Image (cartoon, rainbow, N blue to C red; front, side, top):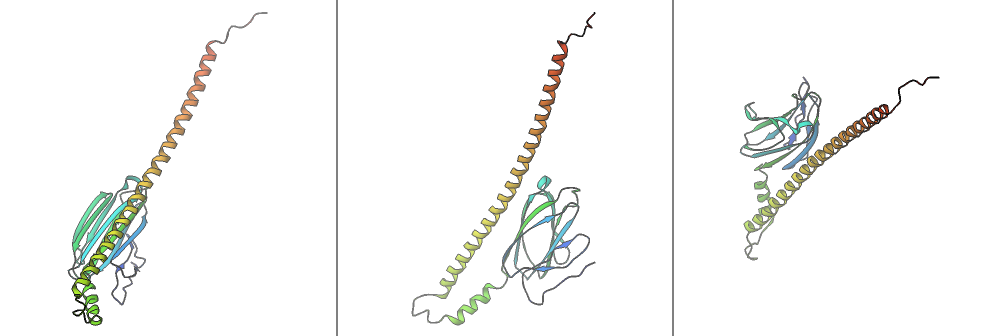
Length: 229
């Protein structure tokens, strides 16, 4: 077994683990919206861990962008090891759960494929991480005199949160559109290569058939009688 690295401070954390060995763990910068694209080799399984606080929201969306069949097995487990989601041979999926304190594990399994690797995109959206309330308290310490300006701090915070939510949703939609575009482009390139291959096969067959027909017609008009002297 390999080793694991746990960060001494609270950040959003993802650790990629292969099926047999655990080479280590890697951390992402603090963010409430993270996406990742990786290549899953044939016959292997990759797992990721995400620490979560109590009563937060964890949304996982994944897509298979490239690879034969565009399918993969997906498994999501709670910190206690209880299976929350298990899907087989799916090309995409979206799952949202209310979390407990601990490390949630989600895995992508390609062990059913022996020759085809898969390119997988997934995105994590984390809500209610306990940071919004702290930010509002910091606002209240620095903003004073709102009564004389006839403005309410709550209205300002509501507007800011609305803008933040809409910007986050716009970024999420753009990320999904890029993933869909990448998958469609891979499908089109695969179809293009397949059409070119079978076109070349048909061309070779047509040339071979034409040569055989010319030879057979020529042989019908040949005088096979031996001339006598």
